Image (cartoon, rainbow, N blue to C red; front, side, top):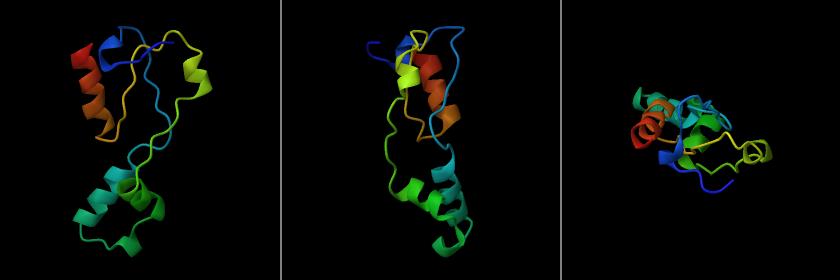
Length: 87
């Protein structure tokens, strides 16, 4: 499949997400609102404190229509904009 870069997306390609999205941002928002770690779901805290890269699925590898790939840990909208600007 070659390399998937921010700059290789093309019009008409779909957008796919792998794994839960927004957990780290939720943890940050809740902490900033004054909640204590004990009041925040552990999954949110782990996503914020110890993020880990997800492997690209076998399904994704088998589809030639995938043009670009990016980590969305900075937020889906911000990172989707990065792909749009680069492509």
